[in-house]
Amino acid sequence: MKLLKYVVAVSVLIALIGCSTPGATAPTANPQEVEATMSIMRTQAYESAAQVFTQTAAAKPSDTPVPTETQAPPTRTPTEPPTPTNTFPPLPTWTPTRIPPTATPVFTPTPVGPVPTATSAALQCQIKSQSPALGASMSPNNDFDMHWIVKNTGTAAWNSDNVDYKYISGTKFQKYADGFDFPKTVNPGEEIDLAVDMKAPGTTGAYSATWAIVQSGQTICTLKIDLQVK
Image (cartoon, rainbow, N blue to C red):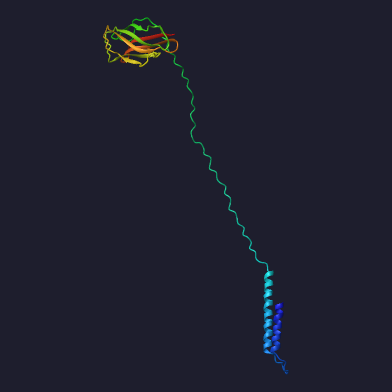
């Protein structure tokens, strides 16, 4: 409104100065005074206009930027790996098998003499003596040499290349080996001393064993051992 008033006042002043009443003599204006007055009015008009613009700008609310809502990224649920499935075949069920203990045969002492065999008349034998004798007694863990004196009563020779004497069954008294070669060839009617290094068991009791003279798997003569460990 103030700006409008100043504009109107300036316009009126210019009109008064520029116009004169017909028939009347207009007073002569001093140009310097007019210019000074106009300058003052222009200055006031500019200042009023500037003040109005400043007040208008201050009264106008400033545009406040609205913050943009930031959308949170979607939450991913971790996928658990599948539980492994046991594909191995079931183990076989083991059923224990009971094996009955093997009983040690007990041999009944027999008198020393000819031992009948299933061999032919060409292969025959006779035990002349043995030491220790059948049923002999000895102390536990006693070392002894078993001797059999055997006679060839057949018609064929016992060749040292193919005739052996070896362990068959019963208690293992032998200290080194279960079989031996004949030390020499035994002709019909001849005798031979067969010896084996042995040891008595460490526990008291009755013990026995069987040895044999064999040729190519065929039994010629059976040799017995029978001891009482006390």
